[in-house]
Image 1 (cartoon, rainbow, N blue to C red):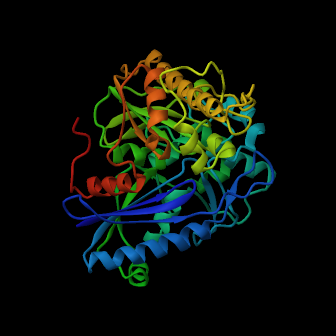
Image 2: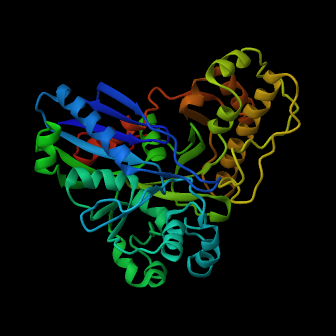
Length: 431
């Protein structure tokens, strides 16, 4: 059986097709338009855009399958929430992972949710759901799902399951294994909107027959419960030991590592996912590549990077955030970016940005160690930022660790690997 992974990312959607031995035989990508935002806290997107691209990519992949069945798994941006009607159709635009309008729900959550829950952020899907309930109402809504769950549901023809990695920021208790009483009591009758939660990698059943026909796929294709985009990136890296950190440098900075026990510190933006019988701990900062994009285009980044000496510190002390608010390694929705003073030399300014993001990364791994995670001995990098050798050397200097680039950093490959694990084509972590 082949495996298909679909990655619903921030700026585009990717597909990876692996043969029965796990070798990549096809990949494709389509760009997505930017999220719509009326202000710095609002971020929405039309789910129809995702579905149109997913259909196109799957039809392309079908031509490479030659009628053979495949296991399919989907990953998506964490905490991107949809409201659905009784037929699984979105009733409104999706609230994206970085929509942060729900600041007024933090006091509500503080009064009902345990301190170690992953919901204590205005961008959490629990905060979003409570905000929608208070400010827009849930009339006509029969289900809430995350981005990956909804696309998986479209392919299954059913919208009754959610993977537990995406469910975490909606309030799911990964230790206990269920929707907690505090959430159900807070939602009241709206608790019926919550679906059944299953572990990532669970076989959900076959592709919907009519969907299979429309996509030219074998109806024996199996749908597998997916995960978040950053966890899919972790799976793509192939890391299986608990002393290797995995840093994803995309629009945001995400760090993760395996640990023997879960760690929850929402006041620092740290949470834990159960994954294939292990615990994956980490956090996601708002710092990252988006800040660089606000200042420079690709050509300028390449040109200015070549003028930087990565072994000499710039002397600048920046906190590179794209806008107000941070999630990790501090959780402060009012934290302001610090991007001054700006030197006349653009190369030095860029170096200061590189170093600022690297210090956020350093502090993130330090927080995990302080809270009980194993000490990281090396870091494997994913994402576009990992391709910049100057930035990699700066990060290695500031982290005090060897930093390498993953051989495969495509989250779609990670989702495909999860699909393979789900149907028994390969085992989980072997390190």
